[in-house]
Image 1 (cartoon, rainbow, N blue to C red):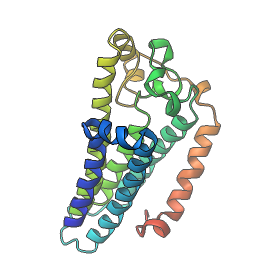
Image 2 (image 1 turned 90 degrees about the vertical axis):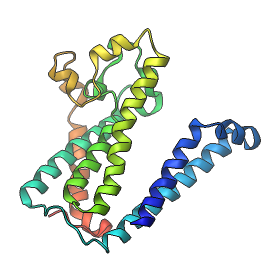
Image 3 (image 1 turned 30 degrees about the vertical axis):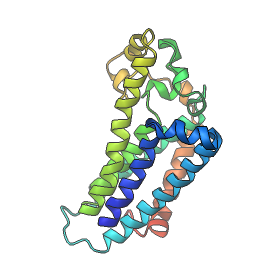
Length: 227
C-alpha cells in the first residue's frame, strides 16, 4: 500500500506542475514541445507505476468490505457499456470534442451530439469506470486506487466548469442552461433533448463490440475475471 500511495502522489504532483511557476521556467529553458513530451512520458510512466503498485497491493489484502455477487456484476457491466458508449461518441463526435475542446462551447446551439448528454464526455467515462471498479474491488487497495480516479474525474469536471465560467463569462449562462455536468441531467430536466440521429447506430455497435471484448479478455489482461 505505501508504494501505491507514493505512485499516486507522484502522478498528482506531475499534473500540478502545469499550474505552477515551474511550467514557464521549464518552457523558457527547454521549449514548449520538450516540456509537453517530458510531461507526457513521465505521466505515462507514473500511470504504469500506479497500476503495478495497485496489483502488488492486492496481494497483501487482509480486509474485504463486501463480496460482489452476480447481480452487482451485471449492473456494473451495464454501466460500463454506457461509459464505453460515451467514450466512443466523444472520440467520433462531430464537431470533434477532443480537438476543439471548450472552444465548441460557444452558446446553446453548439451543444450537440455527446455534449447533449454531458459537457464533460472525457471525464465521465473515467468516473464511471472508476466507480464501477470500486464497487467490485471492495478492499483498501481498490478504494485507494479507484477512489483516486473517481475523485480526479469528478473534481476535474467541477474545476473545468469553474475555469470556463471565468474565461467565458458572457457565454456561460447559455452553455449552462442547455447542458449538464451530470450525464443526462439537461435532457431529464428538459433543457436539452436526446438525438438518435446524432448518435446513429454505428457508435452503439462499436461500443458493444469493445464492451464484449473487454468482458472476454478482462481476466487475461488484468488477472481479474468479471464473471
